[in-house]
Amino acid sequence: MARPGPGCARHQLKILSANVRGLRTNIGDLTHNCVLRHSIDIVVVTETWLNSEVEPTFGKICGYTHWTRKDRQERAGGGGWLYASRKAFSPSY
Image (tube, rainbow, N blue to C red; front, side, top):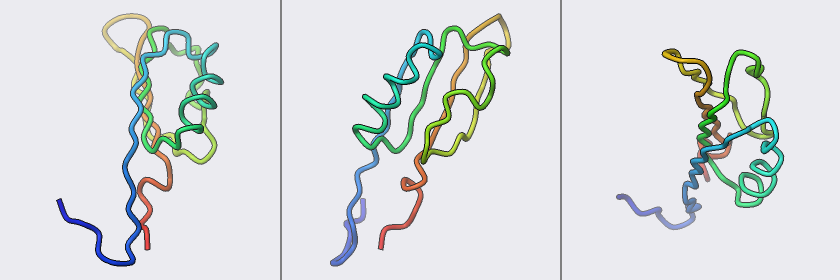
């Protein structure tokens, strides 16, 4: 692993993986008490009850890009989301 040179900012990538049963009722807690409080860079959420009734824009986190949502295909319910902070992929100078 390369070390940052003099004058370069050092940033540790923070990743959160959460198995959230009931994202609709737990999104506030997940967002405010975990993601924002700890400045998480990448958030991966699996949801047991994810289905077509949950809008693709549900759970949007301010300052994060909604990259992908993958619903389970082989049976009803379940899937996941992947969010990434804009700063996680911005060069630090």
